[in-house]
Image 1 (tube, one colour):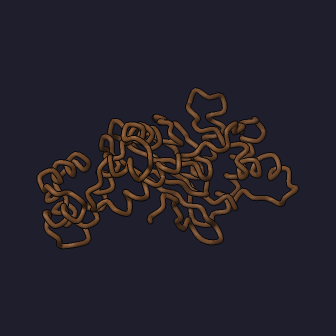
Image 2 (cartoon, one colour):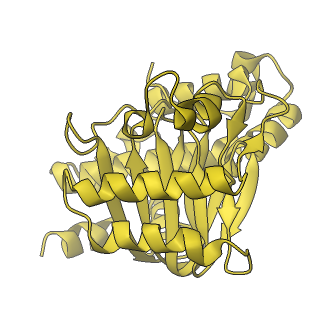
Image 3 (cartoon, rainbow, N blue to C red):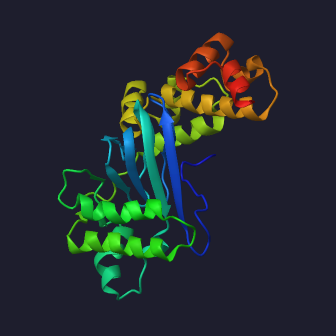
Length: 284
């Protein structure tokens, strides 16, 4: 069964740091599905808005906002009003790991790694330390190159600011996670999206009532189970349109749509183009 744990290679083995740039203009576009990884992630919004779904909480990030995602926090991203220009930095905990008795390690990183504390979730322009924290992040964005010694020094500078200004947040409930039955449903949908899956099927799988499942699933991911299923199906359909010569009807069936007309409507709602137009446009 496919897991929502994201295990991707970042940068190089010697310097596990990766930068991702995004520039999209489409309302309610799912940018990343619900997942988690054991790395830090920093989001820096340049223009527009994005919705960060973090551990069941929906957070709107606007122009200039900076968000910090701690290791193993479940999260997803989608656009809100349309325009979204932002940069994501994902990097290994190893880059800020120090010897066991090092002050930096005992007072900061060890607390985060153990789940006793975490970085603040969001920093906006109204925060007093905003400019001080923004500077090293902008430098990382503007001077990024693989294995850059400057990147490492900027990370240390950034985390030093957190430490000097007591910005770590104590975690009161270290066991707050997406419920296992929600993760089970997410994994099942990812593995079986071509099947005829109903809310009743997922309710039986997770041993909770349909209403309870629908509310809990939306609270955790920002989507209902069926909305999430449609996103997964359209993601698969997009890949088949680009990578195969299957007809629109064949792709609809392979992605769990019994009615090709309904498939076309759902695809157009998510991509603003019909499957045929999308394939034709991408082939140019």
